[in-house]
Amino acid sequence: MSGLKVRACVSVFDDNGRFNPAFSDEEKVIPCDTVVLAIGQQADLSFLGEDTGVQVTPRGILKIDENLMTTAPGVFAGGDVAFGPRVLVEAVANGHRAARSIHVYFNGKSTRTVLSRFRIFDDWRMPRGFLGIPRQSMPVLPANRRIGIAEVELGFDEKQGRAEGLRCLKCQVNTIFDGSRCILCAGCVDVCPENCLRLVDLSQIQGDERYDALIRKLSPDHASAIIKNEEKCIRCGLCAQRCPVDAITMEALEQQEREVFQ
Image (cartoon, rainbow, N blue to C red; front, top):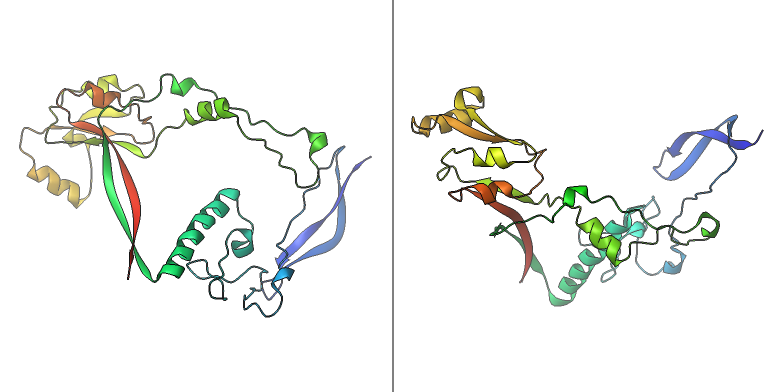
């Protein structure tokens, strides 16, 4: 019989919080015919030396502040060396964040202001047949060539990347209803392909004190309401196209950062 001989890990960190796995003495064999070796990796910080002023935490990563600057003024760090094992996207985000911090460091202190605004799409359309576009298969390196630190996933070519991008449901875009314009014609309810909109009597809706206060403000003519199931909406925009009084718009909340130097 062939297999993989293993021992149970009883603890990962020691009493000081350092990565120091401990194992039981009992061994067992997991039957198998192929074993793929995957090893953990840790940053090699030996290049720092002793007089750099860069402090290393007990976890073996660099100590940084909220701006990604290390304990040595003007030295910034991100990615695995500053946060431990992370995905590639987070490392890229750290690079952008560190670049902004470096810019501020050389130009003076700043305050960052986040500006929010709604962007209204006048003629929103989703790509034709977007729900039927299949998930693209990622090209990978053959198993017999996966040696060293070679990348296993080779990435999409332009055609595959565009096809995969068309599958996005644009969750940042939402239907915004203007109740003052709505004439309760139910056109949006009829045209919705996912049946996520319903026209119901107000007596069927229950809410908190804020809902009760809203109902009291409405005129007696408002006896119905439109409710929406956000989990089923596919952002197709057909409801906005169908509305005869433009009571429905497709909008996205966008945020921008602006730095004001002091």
